[in-house]
Length: 300
Image (cartoon, rainbow, N blue to C red; front, side):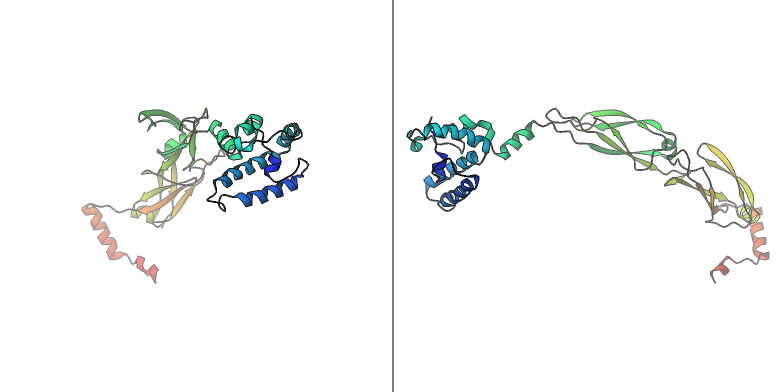
């Protein structure tokens, strides 16, 4: 095995050099033999490799102590240095690797190897499903089918908790993409979309519904029944109510997550018969003759 005099390669006379002197010597030699400056000189490229190799050893206190014991044994006894006979290879020569091995591998190599061995969690899979307002209110088990990575359909049963909020996600742990290097599988995230229906629309924790009444009910006032989730309530309609007015019923809305409920808001809509009978037509004609009411006066 050919011994390399790293101190001589850096232009230093002995191993008594300080860390500052080693660093300064390295910069001077690296600048002198840099391949970009000596592009046509093959010797400069090899020399530059040796300079880097020498600095890696001598700039590290642990490997410097190891090397110094060998340097004292070889150089101190004036053994011939045979640098010209060294084998061609990478920056880390056989001599270098035999004594220092992986201890002086570049940080990039260590990071790369470490990264290859680290377990990597699989990616999450996102999907979404639609549920009705009542299903979300009461909660339910819902079956869904998704296509797996191998192209096959996979069935899942999702437990939708009672009172789940619109846009909330349910997580199925380990049902996402497979992990790498022994890493855990990703998760399946299912976004819940609560869809409005013919009876109700959901806004936050309040439910909205239409309260349809006849023209004479609006004029005379009345009492009507209104279906809510799970029960029927009765409302008093005051005389002279107009379309667009809203009646709020406390604690008949959607769950608030704290044991309570929002409001049920009923919007009044005054309806007229699309196919009135002769008697009804006669009634409205008579009303038209005797009434002095003009709804457009309100616009003045």
